[in-house]
Length: 191
Ligand SMILES: *[C@@H]1O[C@H](CO)[C@@H](O)[C@H](O)[C@H]1NC(C)=O
Ligand SMILES: *[C@@H]1O[C@H](CO)[C@@H](O)[C@H](O)[C@H]1NC(C)=O
Ligand SMILES: CC(=O)N[C@H]1CO[C@H](CO)[C@@H](O)[C@@H]1O
Image (cartoon, helix red, strand yellow):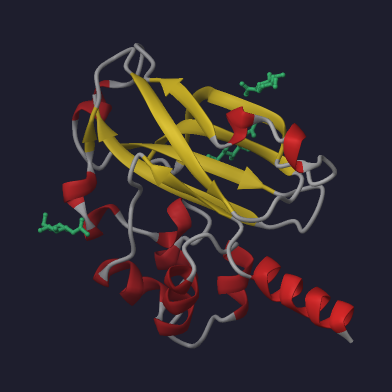
């Protein structure tokens, strides 16, 4: 009885968030994303900011507009919802990241500069983990650089990145070897 309760409790904790970016402060949900993604999906995305996108997909209702929400791009959160969060970086600047990791699921991950108009990465990832949050590793062996790392702002970014709303850093994790779920956050910036 006791052990099954423990298993049940662990399962509930495991069902809560998995990971998200804490620093730099990423994009948030707001009225624009809520209108595009609908009430139920928005509630799923925001009730637990570290939840996988696949949890939100399961909640989609008639208000969910897949094309407008673009869930698999910046978690469906929109530039227009908080322009006050846009960071001003300089070429070569070292940007520290901190990830809140709640549950490990083996996959791969990267942080890339993304083109917000073309909706795709610019160049190669700034940092890349071929194996990320490996859940076969015990606690003492968790690589520190999965949750605390830095990236350098490239010196050869397109001049469009001078204007807010064109470029962002995207932390992107796909738990390909475990639950096959996606997690991501975007940090808008100008350089
Ligand atoms: C890096 O992340 C992007 C999303 O920003 C994804 O499309 C791409 O497949 C990832 N690349 C690698 C090598 O992980
Ligand atoms: C993270 O650290 C490990 C050593 O613990 C190293 O092998 C690996 O290359 C590092 N990964 C990144 C992306 O810096
Ligand atoms: C949460 C947050 O960052 N809110 C900000 C969104 O943008 C407006 C206008 O720039 C700010 O006043 C809010 O503080």
